[in-house]
Image (cartoon, rainbow, N blue to C red; front, side, top):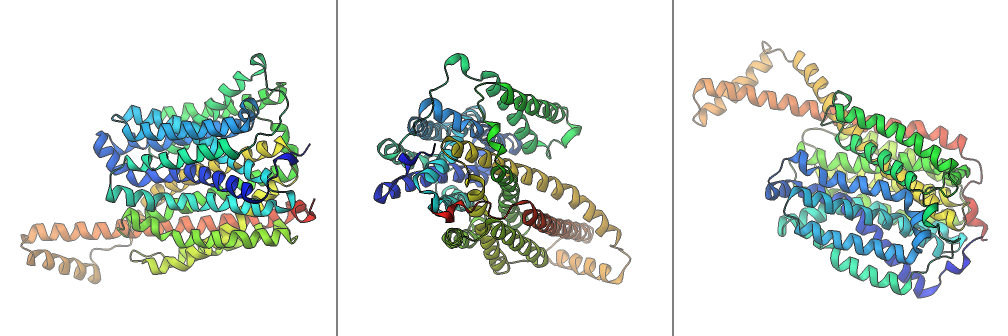
Length: 523
């Protein structure tokens, strides 16, 4: 049964849409805003960078645990109550994070903030989808997509600006007024669908909740900390990988046999949703992977500030936002989503390959501008058709269940992407460095000339000849390391591009003709 009573019109629909996007943005901006403040946080809390990374990890783990349960929780407490409570939890936890004085306090409050935040993303998507009639679903996903794509990009420049001009607690305090407004709007305007009767306490799948938390929490920890702890050489990573693997198997078994599962896996029998879930994973990989690589490259190789690195991504986001309504219109006119998705993957390949060709130790912001605009076009072509395809043939409470799957897979795709990219960067840099050093013959005339010039330069600055020679060699060593790192980033872009290129034939062959075109039928 379709919840037609949830379809909204006129100003009510506008207010509900703004509320939902505000909440989605709150959640997503908070995922990336902390990244640029870590240095200041570790200084004021007196901890190491490895320790402060837990501020990001705790939030991500809580997020990924709560996302699949969102649909079930909405049914238990009523969507309006659950959504409003989640905003209140998120806002209160933001205040506590800003006031935290120890490492453990901020980790605990970030975890609580993540539990509130995970609900915001999926519930916002469900509310927006159900507020629009089926023929306008493409437009609904475009509006929601603007928040999801622009959010990760807004985080770093906003965080950089706040940290440069005030202090790190304000990256949390900024959520408080927005959270209060969103809560009031939710209570006044959002409706709850009439679900089947709630589960009684003896029907609640406590074992399922526990297995999900263990499986997803362990996996997220492994992905966030694998590289810095040397992956399976570290006992904790090895044990948690095994725990996660068996946790998922037991969780899937439990959900399939239990009468009142907390996550309805049967909804994945819907072909469009199953394919959309896989595509969401790849989209997360590309979206978060590329959003992660560029700021790190510009800060570590080119020496940019966090604010400048964040601002670099803004043209890309503006382009995506510009593309969203155009794509929605194409979908409404009956264009096959699979052709748009294939086009998006091809444009993403072009962006990656272009980035691969322009990287040097001196690449400037003007070199990045057009490739990033192309990236914006690619993301616009991917997000709306994938989400529309995923949810196109679902009705009623299945929409929430489907949105939870695509949301979780997009998050996990991003975590996998970042984990794999960081591993490659550290491993491949070593390989490239060895390769460069073997080709660097200190007996060669050019190398000798360079070292002599550097030595004379240091001597002229008042260094003793021996010290000046050591400094010259140190400088050469730094140049080699920098060049090795640049080559590694080039590899990352090339392989990301190839990954997207490989996906295209599968998209064209596996997505059936007409899949996801419910929208244009005007039901």
